Length: 191
Image (cartoon, rainbow, N blue to C red; front, side, top):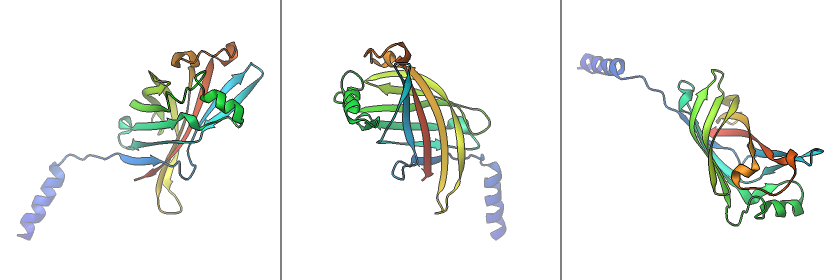
């Protein structure tokens, strides 16, 4: 009987397809180990830097099948912080983010092309001010492993540049400020 059970178990293991499962990660915004920052020219003389203080999201990643990676991020647009209260109020107005009508921006991935080094090109839908465009940008894996408290973490970074007018922002800031760069530094905790 034992030999029959053992033989049956071995046959099942040999016949069953070997499948790996993607690991699910929650972006560590509570520990402030994730950032959504922006950079835009100020009249061609300097750069205005800022960030969004409140956002949440998750991603999945399988080292054996990185092409199946996926990401979802939702940003609270009213949490914009350029280190200047009066300017932040203007950025929240309908001249820019119009947070009253569009309280969230979001990114939902639609595909990933791995580069063989843990990073690659991420494709997805980015929505801002109620306008959605398909976008793609390169991401790099910063690292992955166990932290000092026994949790598994994985981190990526990437930048995406777009024209403000593509998302209905047409406030005149001069030709040097037609585009904005978004920088993402995302650290996730495996669930």
